[in-house]
Image 1 (cartoon, helix red, strand yellow):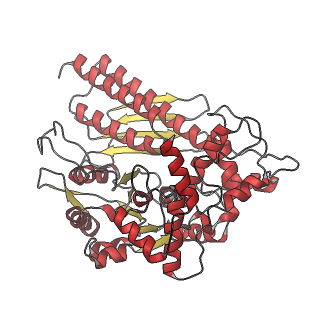
Image 2: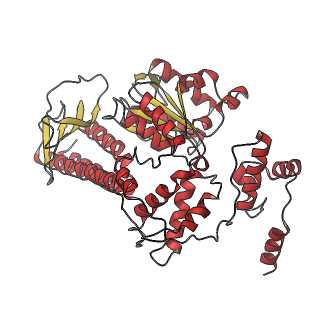
Image 3: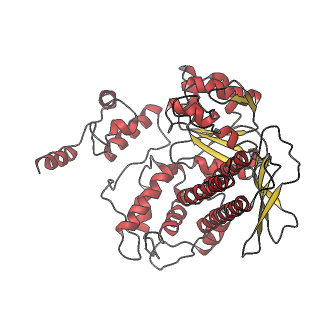
Length: 479
């Protein structure tokens, strides 16, 4: 390949890293960097590429990200190194392993040097964002609900931005601390919005794999036709549109942790291939029969009842028992209402600069109103409610915006029979959707039911639409 063309291709990778790093959160930087190292190695026909980090406090450099060609030796002298010094005293080095075309001419080395600088800037930006997210403000105001000083100081020791100190949350955190140092598969169980990815990241960051990639994939967000190539990759020409060979998430996570969110939505044919990876540590890219070895720790998550799905034949029993080595149940927000003040202040402090707001107080009446809600969307729903309230509030005191949600929603209680809890949950969904059963944003859609099925449940539980809701719809239609 001509020198100018090779330098231009490396420059394109540099541009991809720069644009991608701006549009994603810090959790995806490691994936972007690892993929950039892979592309450079393939262009230069090199065996490996490593980004090393050296801090003032550390006597030796430690590999931050490494890409190693399959079958290449793990210990070999680099063909070239590109040091990058940072103003805070830390240093980084991009090392390229043995390559067929080295030594490289000046246009190639200059392009690699630019890539090293952009990668380091992306890494530093991710670190700054993570640090900013951990900053908390100690606020107080007479006559309003303020954050106690002791609480504000304890925020510095928060567990992976998992905010709270309730007994239910402490149990889940203790389970993470137990299993993290091992290589056991972990199953995170809980309702939507309870922070399953935060807990998965906590498991990874407290394991021996913390220096390797953490890769996340949402099994429910991908079409069944694409999820196999997303997990295992594909070779060029494997299907229409496969113009180049692509690594899958398993290869990107090699040596690290793969988080499979919504594992209950995985198609049955992919379940069988996933089981083989877990049992034998081998897989094939789509379009080839060549097996590849991989060493990945699996953390899976779901809000479905996998035992029921297993009995109904929708989820493989052997895969279930492989994944469910160490289950961790994450508590819903309604079971940890004592964490509400800290969570509210956390979301306020995280978003007020971006929203050009400055809040110094939160009335007790606001916290009381929040505690009376059932929170089917849990912490994710709370974050959206707080941001909406921040936009709605004009002063320094947070005021709830009650327009999108009713003010009084009876929370689902822990007591009572399963049928009573189901009745309460259905009624809460109907209230939130203003008793709409058809149309956009209706209660049947929220509950995952057919409208006729929801009507039958309402009849079974004796749930009747109130006249006030009928009057509201009638007035809106006649306007």
